[in-house]
Length: 329
Image (cartoon, rainbow, N blue to C red; front, side):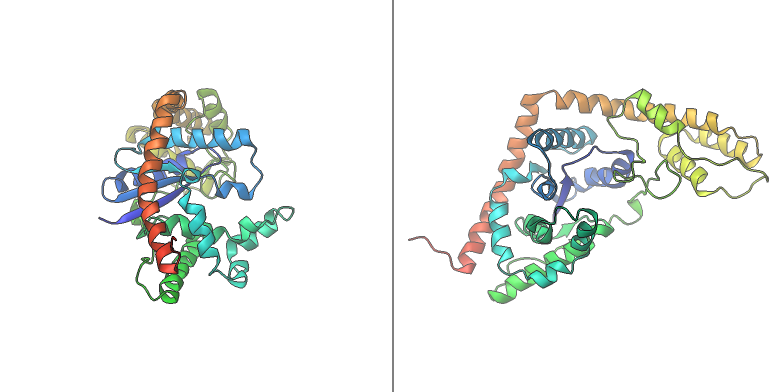
């Protein structure tokens, strides 16, 4: 059984793209591997979260992942800042990370461009903290998106460098966890690209019925088909892709026939899509609200996750300190 680690952002709510993309695979993954899922609240400090935002965001993200199927009995689900071994390993890895290589990372260059007023040291050393998150549990596999592939490569580099410098074979070189064809790309409502937080084109799992209807009815469409059986443009194909996730096949077939015969009314299609999303989403939303209001359960899950994570992390840090040469008098 392999050890798999996945970081969960601590800002923003889960949308349908997250659910059908990563979360469903996380649920399967926890049944097949030794999994660590953590909420990355240290990473969020590279922006300027307020104390109110920081805590409430962590709570909501934890509730959402629990509501969608992550099981605290099967996996370690924890808050990054609850594991104090992580920042110490981060410090130790920083001693063997070089400014030049960190300045060349794509993520750092992008952050310089997007937040020039806040280019802090945390942004520069983000790949080192990510490496500490991974190496503290000696993870073999890490699910990453395209935007994080370089940072995972940096984690492998730091693992190899540590092993070479101290003449040990201690840290494994983490590899990307490939979901393959199982990874569903969910389109956004703006007619192009995938659903995402930054793009503002998503349906969130905590959205109420009114919000979902409003979002879907404002989805981008065109003037309609003019030739029978013509190829669908991207915005319309995107709406049918969403339907495939939440609607009955008979519903999809009905609107495809209407499209192919040039009789489709996009208003009717979007109304049906909105109702199908609401039907799919409602049980998840209710569970999110139920879990997030249960302070005792939330506290129990966070405590259990921290206990599991610290058991793994403390052993790694003990080993690393001994390898480097720290000794107690």
